[in-house]
Length: 461
Image (cartoon, rainbow, N blue to C red; front, side, top):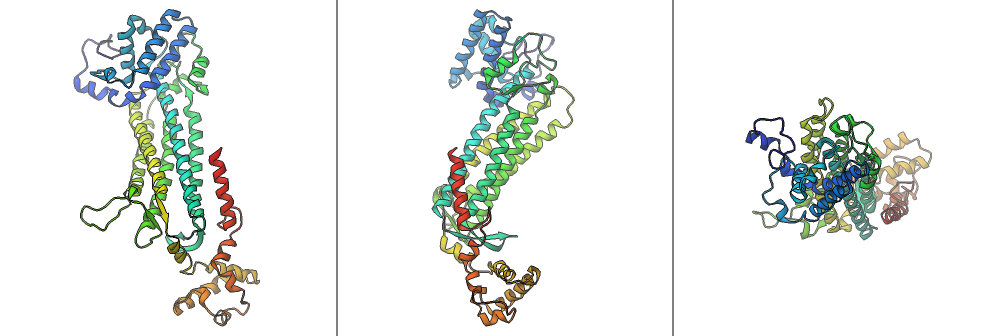
């Protein structure tokens, strides 16, 4: 090593310019791969011994030294005055300081290219599992909120205009389903993250008979990469991961937008506790849903990281190029952002209360039962298009009278169609309106109760 922690330099007569060194080095951000790289290095050392590339005594010294480094990761002494190009060279430098020249044998049969890719995948696999756990926590809070307000009725919207009434629990479970798909996407992406590139060398493979399958098994990889050029030069797994995270953020942003509206004075459907709200520096009366606004705002940040990875990869020739160092910060910040957003969203939902009187009042005004009147007419033998047009005229008449549909007299309704009977008022009631939506996936109380039970069973698995 020609400089502290530098793995190359024998071919160079001059030291790097200090600005280039700063530009080139990644230690300031990739040190979070420390534990993953040490774990991979231990498995590699074991692989070298099994292939009889190093002796048992040498492998034990290397492995034990690496284990000491792993145990001291939280110590300030390990990091004080650290000067390295990246975390990988830092680990090798520390190992050599600890056990002497035998530490120089660790890098036999591997390149930094397959070393970095392996540590990155190991780290990301663990963080993907953490994100999946946070998704389940949020799903659990949505189920709890639905349980707390299982009889609440909410106006459903299209075009941000009141459309049809739904059970509030149905609204909660809509986001539950979005998060379920997010979890499935992450699980699927994890399968392609969990492929071991170690043994691919710089680009052509390794000249040592290391049992890659055994090393992969030790590290918990499902399989090994099939092509050394591909293994060291693609980061499609990182793109897929950030893409899955982008959809998580889309759903969190939509959840936030709904609740921001519902918390406003204009709606008044939901109240957030002081624990997840903030005030104004000027207006003493204000209580702002800042947590929700940050959830909405941080979505764009994750979208940007996904796009930056795509742009970084699109023109790269095979195999490794230094451009790929830019993958780390994009993925690191995506992980940090998504994890804190999921945690914050769960806390917001935990601290939310529904004003059931206001939501019911909104769900029973504004002609949200107009579709039920049309369906009622269809059941009387009226073609749907005729029923739709007739109900439109009835709604216009009701608006002119300043009345809801169920406030009109039977005589007034029969002026439009004589087939309308007294039973129309039962059909127009909020109870009948909801109960009628009893197909699978519908918002009838029966279907929603079943869906809520199914959601609980899913979380208990």
